[in-house]
Length: 335
Image 1 (tube, helix red, strand yellow):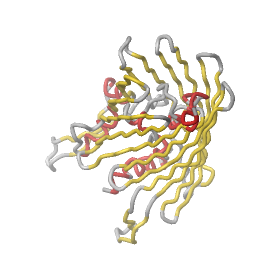
Image 2 (cartoon, helix red, strand yellow; image 1 turned 60 degrees about the horizontal axis):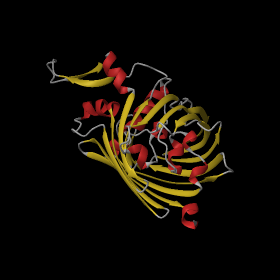
Image 3 (cartoon, helix red, strand yellow; image 1 turned 45 degrees about the horizontal axis):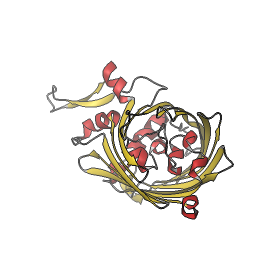
Image 4 (cartoon, one colour; image 1 turned 180 degrees about the vertical axis):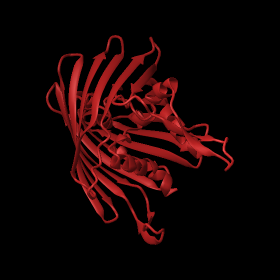
């Protein structure tokens, strides 16, 4: 099961050696609200400091003084944990700082001849800082700075990432639009001689309240720096019992760029969400995905300055992912 937990990482590393992106774990959300909406929520307006990792422009003085602790049991034996603290900086600005630890479980190492050489545990630590400022009463901009230390067996690396985000929010019409330049930067220290890129991306987000109902629709477009996102599917046309072929059509590529989410929030104390990521569903089609591949659900409750959020997904029929957030708003407690 550990292999499932690091499948995305190992594939990303291989792509990095051919000139494409690595460090794909930077795209794993730390917010249950984001994970419950399909894994991304760059336009979600909510006074939750954990959303700063989605878009630094979602951070604002409305968070007051707040801390969030998060844990995720990732597919297989992966375990991720983190904490983020944020507070207002005047009437129009806010800042946050946090740390994330990602442990992908124990793996067996092999030499080129296939002989086992024991086990190792790949892990990453990310130190993060965020700042945002209100440009006008509807526009807000923000920046995230991340310092990443990676340790895989005898190899270590250090990288720096930067996110730039902007958000437009029309409260009267409950409309939110966002744009994020994500994971700009690069390696300062390489694992060996090969250069591993960060997964730089341009993302667009839309979230709209549905009339006077407590429902909101969220759509996020990702991987906008490259159009073609092929994936493998099984073919049974060969005499050896099957093979894999790349699938890439216009419709397939279009929807693999999008995540969809539906959020139900009847009050400030309760929220429920359902999300769908078509890229996850199609990526897992090669690995005997379940009916629920690509879907995620989330729920949260908030009482007197304390909040709890939980999100769940089952990307593969043999592996699921569970995320938990605990939040405390000190400003709300003191009022």
